[in-house]
Length: 578
Image (cartoon, rainbow, N blue to C red):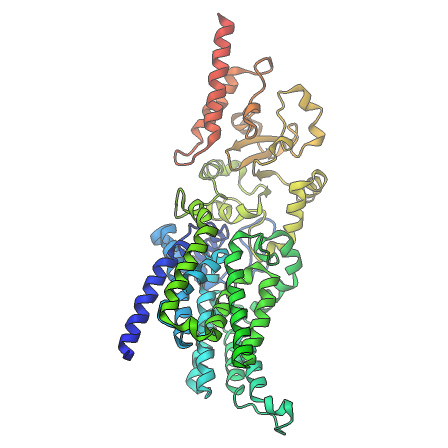
């Protein structure tokens, strides 16, 4: 086959494999951190400067914030301002597709037959399920794959020319301003430098040579130096390194409260394709060593280091995907490099992945939307914007995952309690404990002096009792938000808002408090039919306000429940009149 024909075949199989990978790449956007990235991007483009202090919260307002993803955020906001979330969705697909192209180049470079791309690329895409949302890390995955490709080319060239130094410096200058994942690239270069040093000095270790050699490792050391110092060319200088290291110093805390920082486990359904790819990669490495007596310390050190990283934290699986895919096809036997084997492997892969992930993929695409975020409520945003003169910059408590969206929608009229940025890691334990334990909530409430609370309705029966029920008055000391102190002013099926009574004016509270309607337990939306404490006219007024505050495009099952209650209540009243 001529070189031109080979390139055409490679391109054909890559495009076919990319099409087969789309179900894994094109999942809807769900990352709640996207919104504080947009807030930062808006700040950058409006002020032509990077943020150096927090401006979105009331808790850390003015505190130093090293925004090491500033360039990505500027790109996000620029695209969003023109094409909304759909533009960011297609940017994600483009970046992940480019990452798969880098993997395909590595496969071609290693001599893998082009038909094997039909299963290898979808396999890699399925292994990225934990990281394939819209997030700055999309850039890091692409740059990491490019680094791996350039390092493998250098192993064969081994000249470390000046142009290659410039290439690495430019790559890491850009990468360090896009995302902190450049640290993984530096680690990879370090592994290649150490592995090359061990490879070329095998004779020294065995006593055959009397002097150490640096001829093969020197280019990688130069690349490492160029990349390391190029990363300093960012608005924050050396401080981006301190932020990255701080993440790992706090990793034991983070893994207790944030899913992606937890240790690897097969109980996470979306982590299982990666586990299979990792097994193939390590198996290919073992096959190359025992069957063909291949000894390459660069691959051995890379396999050991990224095995440790991936087993330590789920967030590292995306980088491990590139590593173990490469280890497999660079060490696999000749049978895996035959074209006909590629077709059989593709058929087997899609049969297995269909059995494993078919239902989860169906659930992901059912009711598809570019921005189907569970941690959002346009009705809540409308209510808070409308009442900003009364509620603006009250000391708000909010769930961790809601902070980014709230800051995006409500700044500058409100400040959030926390969002997903690293500057709020110290609040994680307090948030988790106060959500689950009454004593912890009381401590957090007193310490932070909350004036407004945004909470999700789950476990609502212990959060806010109905003041119209006499028996609940005795229980007020055992609930999170006693009615004598807090007033419910907004709710839907995703979130509710309560304000401290002495933080707002009595007139505003009279117009906006819900005395009868409640966001939990449809049977307890209002006091029972026999309770004389119910003022039906006031209840109907609340019902009208509730309906008026609902967004037509937001499905809220409570609307139907309240309507059914009201119909039954009215019929009961009519019977009594008769």
